[in-house]
Image (cartoon, rainbow, N blue to C red):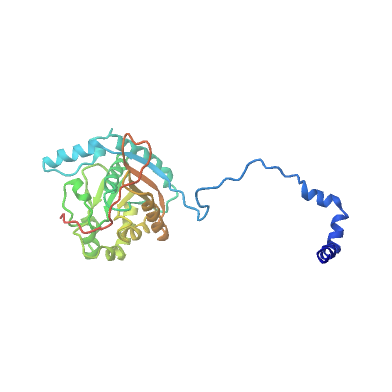
Length: 307
């Protein structure tokens, strides 16, 4: 009896009386005009945080011709090979030739003509791509300067059969004139600057005002300046160099560089204010049906013993 009285008391209130006196309102709450067309689906990926898009500008096939050419020249005691010069129809060079065309559009809004090429770690092929891209740009009539800014273990001088000394490190540390460190490659419109003797303080040299001034002078003298920088994951040098460059290309190696390495490297460069235009996927196997990432490697980046 008490329970019934409580129910009646709850029903005897203004809100309930107003509700039952207008049946159209409670009928609308029972049968609305909403229809379900697509049922919600559970996503397997987090919606936050949003990941930035990784743009692959080019895929470069692995080159058997490069390996054969290097072995052939080394047997003769010669230098490394500029594949774009010796084998201009190689598939890797054809891919770079297509990239050359794309670069004209990708770099149209760049603040200067300095292009840095880097990667997550050693062994991805950034020096190979730097040399051959420079050679291809020079073949179109552009005046091109290639700078080896990897003063820890760079070896671009070996492509041209020269010693590394009298290069970038001496220019910065000793205040040498630019004309004394710029060398001809033997290819038309194509000059380069070696690392110089490997210094004990490469990061400090890259922070020196003479390095910045040298880049500004070369920007005015050449149509395109390509800078082969140290890798991103090992040291901070790439972030320092990249702040001077109008654009940066990032090299990843097929079946070696892992996706998280690319993402972390691009994040580090972005935090340093470095503008990365896209990724070059290098040494892609001819029979590869997709982009696999499985091989791990360390980031110990020690001084090279080559002189």
